[in-house]
Amino acid sequence: MNLWPNLHYAVAMVLFCIGLYTVIMRRNIIKKIIGLNIMETSVFLFLISIGYLEGGAAPVHGHGVDPSRMVNPLPQSLILTAIVVAVSVTALALSLVILLYRQFGTLDVSRLFREEEEAG
Amino acid sequence: MKRLVSLFFIGALALLLLYVVSRMPPMGDPGNPTATRVVPRYLERAEEETHARNVVTGIIINYRGFDTLGEVTVIYCALAAVLAVLGREKRGRIRDYVELSGFPSSVIVRTMVALVVPFILLFSLYTILHGEISPGGGFQGGAVIGASMIIFTTIYGLHLSSVKVSQGLRSPLEGSAVITFFLVGVLGLFGGGNFLTYAWPKVSQALHPALVTWLTVLVEVGIGLGGAMVLVSILFAMVREEGADEPLA
Image (tube, rainbow over all chains, first blue to last red; front, side, top):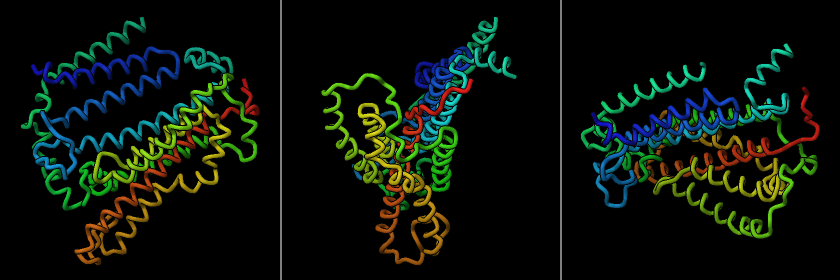
């Protein structure tokens, strides 16, 4: 069992579950989006910690650091890409939420469903 | 009941994930497969191959250029979708847009923001231009520019900030990330290499380091400006509240 050395991974998993709980249980759509962002962040944390090296340095040459002591640059570039995609997804979701609020005047999912039933 | 089922499901998922995590090799161990397989090749050869001292920038712009090109397209598509949903602000009507907060910000806040925003912009320029020799790059710098505009807009209001960063300035620059990246890629074809090749075979070897460095900086600047303008446009589309858009229900 490596739970204690892998504490970063474990925290990422707990964060993921917190985000999933928020997405499932909260009825406010904006809180659901916040939960989605928490889940994304937990995945970022997980991947970045996989690339960590004990006593490692930043993967930048020219400071006299031996390449074997540098942390893994691959997850970092992957996450840089993923953060931007996450921002794009959040922006699109929030703009849809704005439209929804203008239309129905509420962000509560259950009330939205009820209004839809009454309308259709 | 539904709550109990969800809690049970999430609890079971958490236990499963924690179990898997506890069986993974210890974090930060130099003998991990993640540290011994692909990465040494990148770390040892990146500087001579990409001429970028920052290996992360080398990977993003050079090794995985296709990936980043597609991802830049994703940001642009997100902007297009947001504008399709919310609509762009109309020129000349911007004075009619209601300020969302009824409370004018205090003199202290206004002065501080006016003092701080130029330095944030300077820092973002440094982040963009130094991306290949120190931590930083186009995406990060663009995000910093976007953040500075968010501060400015929340304090000074949409009207003033849309005068400072007008629509005529933003519209051409929003696509600059995609366009710069694509043009640099096509230039690689004319230089005798493949798409998105930076070291062109038709150019003499002695010029390669300077060529690759300048092309990398060009792509970084394009990504930075494009990303920043996309963020600002999304912000303006969201902040704006039109009187004409009455709720239909």
